[in-house]
Image (cartoon, rainbow, N blue to C red):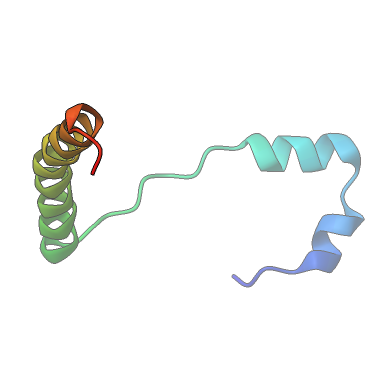
Length: 64
């Protein structure tokens, strides 16, 4: 089903609001996509403390 902007303009405001508020079902992800998302989470969990440490270290370092 393709997006048709003319179909949206034919809707009444209440119909458009109802159509916009209807939740979409969750997408089924493959194993590779799930693996990439888990790897991204692990990367972020590792990167945040490193960046926070570098930021705090830069704040406390004497100016050159």
